[in-house]
Length: 245
Image (tube, rainbow, N blue to C red; front, side, top):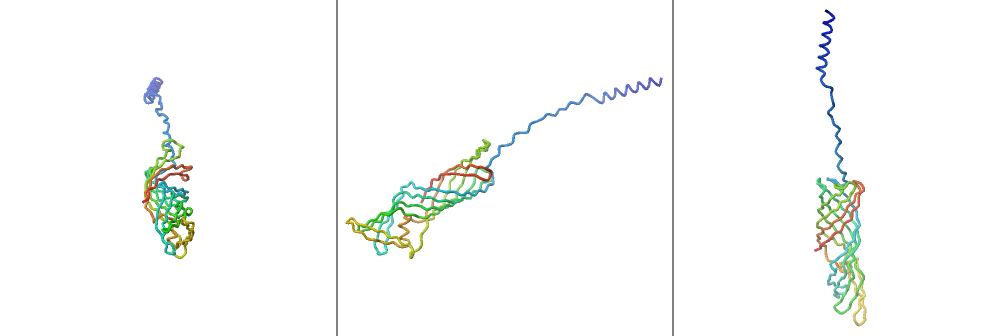
């Protein structure tokens, strides 16, 4: 009788274990691949850029200006220039791009040596002379608003950004010395073949050499391309159309 009771208890216990154990466990977890990393752009927001450049300036308005100057001997001459101003120079720019990296502001300064074209000196008594090109030192300062489009936002590895800008500034013309130190002497000849020398001093000599007038206000617009080798190093090239008043 004791043996039967023991077997019955074991049978009940075994059944209970089976009931509480339930069905075999099967994992419901699935492996999900992580999303691809966004393309890395070399152009970022809150950038502060410093650039250096060389520049070539050429005029398209035909150049030319006329002034009346008095030589040291009291003779009055008309000075006229022909040809478009042109010259080489260089400068630096300082650019800040907003947290929205597609827009920014820039301050740019450049110095250059400009050629006025051929200068003609004509006297009221028929004396006339044609000199070589006059030269003038000039500085250009501008402030611009810039919009750019980094292409590596769309094509990873293409670290190129076309951009456009518009702004305003001024041309600051240099002078040479003062009334006591600068002289310009021309040999002028009349229609009869008679020659004489006339000398201009100081600001009058500068007028012959420069023949540009006074400092000018300008507005300009243009566009360019910037390529980045790294997020911190790049090169750029741009073209500008300048309107001078």
